[in-house]
Image (cartoon, rainbow, N blue to C red; front, side, top):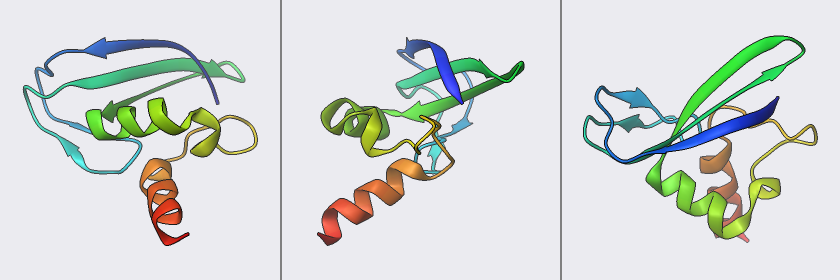
Length: 85
């Protein structure tokens, strides 16, 4: 999955699920919205501020698979792996 658009949301208007850690993003929280296409299909997801901070600090390659895709829970898994080592 190749994301080609992202925008920062200062305050969400409705609850969302973070694609990076699978936790709830409550109304009024900061988030990042990602969207793009892969093989002609549209994908979109939200990331909570903690996952955004993790990706900004360690980079996309730390959480994405070999194709550059972000699977659900990837940031939480990367965080656990980093803490275990």
